[in-house]
Image (cartoon, rainbow, N blue to C red):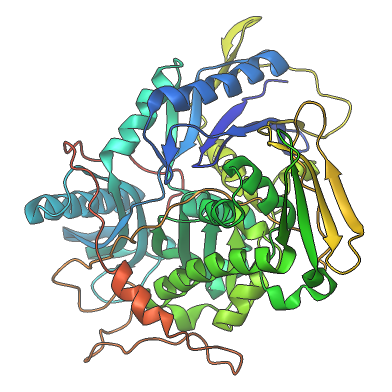
Length: 548
């Protein structure tokens, strides 16, 4: 049987993940995956191509060694920060009332993207911007509005209008992706804007239809994607995430960053008031290179983690309010990314917002998915892999024993589990123990192996396990400025308000809290972070595989 193997790389600030999959008789299968610590990437953008390419080289080498395949092309993620959102409108007049064809809808989208890029150039505010994603919101035939894509195609009309949300990003980070892959003689088959890829992994179609905010807590970036009516309506991101928590632990406990990361993974818990019996215990850390020990209270550690997560969630709630869609989130908020695995993380955001908050789990889109892959931390990589299925004419790999392209015949393993290799940095600890502050007796201990594997023994909490969060630094969020001359109706088919809409409160519930920090944070986030000025290269990516 001929199978086309698809290779996906998720390049993040804290880790770079690779996955290989193909379509089998039993469904789409993941046959190999591996994760390595990231290098040369900050806030989701490749800054040092040489360092990033060395990590990718090791990942690609593992594919050849384990599967005997030579990788030619990959699907890879576009940066998630900074992103500028613009509203676009395109009109296609027609001489006669003839049936609308799909190629005319494509032409409308291309015109809207071109108009927005020209407007950015005329403003002179954003230089070197490219279209990362263009999502159709609604259409009109001059009589009926709003119409979906399926509704407008096939109608007889002499007038077509299309309304779009266009997401712009700096061209230089996208060019750096090509340069990095080129060092390993690889080509990007497609660069994907991540919100829809991740949504296909962790959201149900009902969630996307009823309204949901997808919060991806990544290494260097936390992003908020809002879906209603089955469509991506709003996106924004902030340049800090899980690494901020790691750095806080490092600074407060006086340990190395590597050790702080392992402490976060093993013992990072939100909501110190819900620790129960664990609040009286402390961590005793014995350093490998000396006889010194450090003692950190479990409750104090939880307070450090909670303080940073509150700041991140305050920014998330501010973005939701700015979207003017806060009242339309019927399915609440879904958390994903490595940072979402912090214990009590969803509970903290639920108390702050009043929404129903849950941690997203990988859906059943793959056959026999191994347990190691069924985690929100892998949602991005698996989403890229699944999106690559639509690229039928792409040559991803070659078989050294078969010169044909896309005709790879491999024997199926006996079991359906995927091959996994995960690399962990060596921590500079010999032992971590959880002890009772009164009796001094050890409750839990975790010793490292001789190879230096980090001790991440899970502390007992209120029934949840701790997180695998990633890197980030503080910063300001990119502002979303609408295009002048808005249409008579907005993108959702609503007439514009006569007066500015007051600050929106999410769906009213008695449990919701009014955070005064929102206003202060809003003033800080309202400053625009201007990306580095680069040469204008236009749209680098063409149409996405997701056709809206």
